Length: 414
Image (cartoon, rainbow, N blue to C red; front, side, top):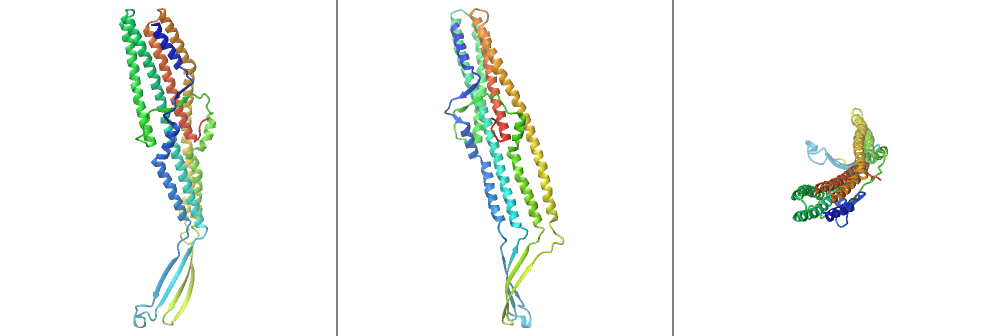
């Protein structure tokens, strides 16, 4: 009995170093997962095509309208002297629309703003993908570490039960002690199977996010560290302006103002100039002609489109305020969650786990002199591991919340 309890004690104290829990290298790293997710994601690829398409649209918006060539024949197929082409007049005319008020440059400005918005949409999606893959990876890593710890506990418990069985065979203790120990061991095995099932689900989700269904993930490489210091809430709110969902509104405002300028320019009518050649068959003579025309802006001065464009500017301002308010609320909820988790982790690290270690030590030593039963030793052992599991779960949640906050501020929390 003394040997078995000493084995448990030695292993437990070796396992419970609660500052850092890591996974050895050799498995899939979070950097590799992020890289594959960004490279393979079809939504990002589609957004990249959208940017390329808008680049082509910008090229088109900077082109002048094509000149127009026309031919006209008069005084043909009529009666008497005009029944043929002898007295006809044939005109060949070349005309060109001249866009005034800088319409072309203003169209290009709108096209450039569309490209900028598409780039912000791409960045928004990229950050969402990175945030999601990091969150799932860290959750999977936490479960992997929990599996390792529980497998170690089960291994220790198996050895402990084997020693108890020897004492039963020697007639030193009741078989009921072994039965009670096996009940605890069965409970541990049930928890382990549940964790393994969760781990497989997380791995499937990872494979789905990185679009590598044929990839085999044997293990995850990384570590979960408990960072005590977190930035102040106000500093995070200030950094919220870097969120691409808010940054894109700078381009949105530029676009809306560019549209206003373009619509205002359309109030200025375009000039059409023409030049041509005219053949007078009856006089056997050639003449040249030139002309110019411009619409009279009496009724349509594009006033409705101008007013709409101006309203759209105010609309985007309200949209910005709505999005910022929503993101601020989301940040506030996450920050409160983070501080609560940090407090819980600190309490587990500084109080609960050390107290459980001390209780296990006392019960183990008391068992040697007959003050505590074997079941008490097993209960103390399981309590210590449950606290350890809880600590790992909390650390995993801390990383998950930190990842979501980093996704909101588009920067790593330092």
